[in-house]
Length: 129
Image (cartoon, rainbow, N blue to C red; front, side, top):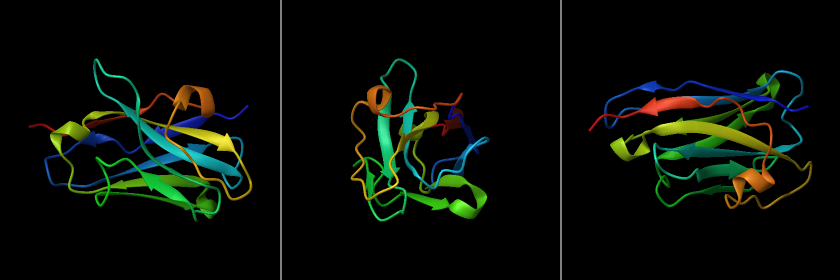
């Protein structure tokens, strides 16, 4: 059963950067679409970015375009979310989820709980105002 582990969160100042990691202990992520999502206190989970198995198809939420980048290192069995120019509104718990799809796949950030699986405990990102 796929189980993802998120890491790399922390407390940073506005304008600084963080790199989040999403890894699976039992399987490689080569055949999976990976999506990053976040949930702030009192808000619903929202999509941040997703990427297909080959890294060819990637999408970003409007709120993070130009600041965040999703990429994978299959040798390390890890998918990363590089976050730059962080803002207080980026404060949230960040989660990654997976869809098994070893073929070109136009991922979506809609309906995360219905489409993605393997959610971990998340990693907290805090950017104070």
